Length: 37
Image (cartoon, rainbow, N blue to C red; front, side, top):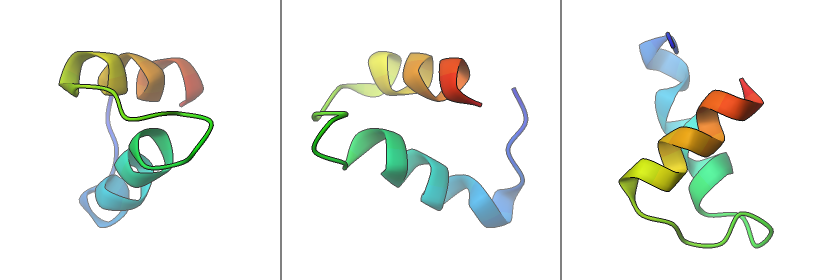
């Protein structure tokens, strides 16, 4: 998966910090990012 550097923090925050997403570790967060983008 490729996310432009300018959007990486925003994408990770959306998938890691939101209440519905919970607070997962690295592997689960990356899996969530991959499924959504």
